[in-house]
Image (cartoon, rainbow, N blue to C red; front, top):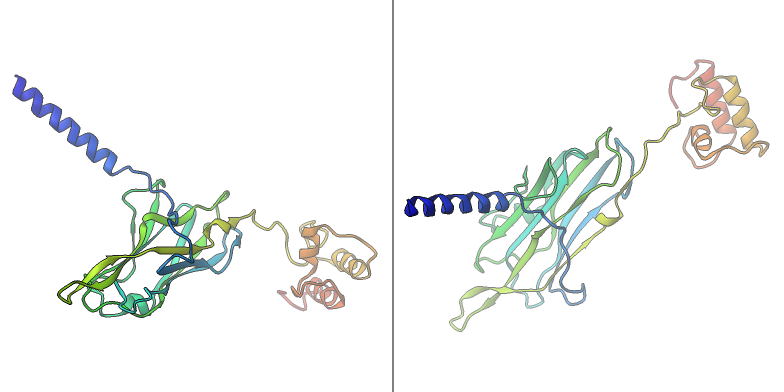
Length: 267
């Protein structure tokens, strides 16, 4: 009876450990040194930071610098985590760093994240290991990923580097002249904390008075705005600037008039 109880207890403990190992929250990566102290510098930069539902943006992940000893990298790892209820990946392309044949493992793979704080998380994984042999000496783009903000998403965008998904190992020679992996200080530059998703723009080009129709009343209102006779709201200004040159002038008035007369079908 005691033996059976011990077995049951062990099985329960194993189940608990398995549960927690698969449900650990993945924290965001935090740099442990300054950029000036780093021997290896990664960058993960979005080309846009002010986003709206439906917008697309591109993230480029690169290795910017390698150790100063000139021996290159023996290993590297980068993992980008995103929530597919917020974002949809449009494309994923290897850069020259990921496609270099000297890596024994490599290439980005979009896969389900096993340990994360999102219910529907995915992570883009890239890693390379060669143990100091045939060290990686070039710098440049690892991968470029293009994302689209989901139309029904509202709120803060959660998009980051996994806490143990950014690392690197350098190369040095042992006393027998054999290449070995050495610890290096690494740093990640990123603008992910600047990513913001605002509300979808609630205006229609040409519908200056926002009554749901584009007609002579909109033409008149745009003309008066161009002459400084009326003050428009921010959304009305965006609707009146149909050629999107940052100014409301006679060119916008003419285009709105032509649209209202069915001479053009789009701005």
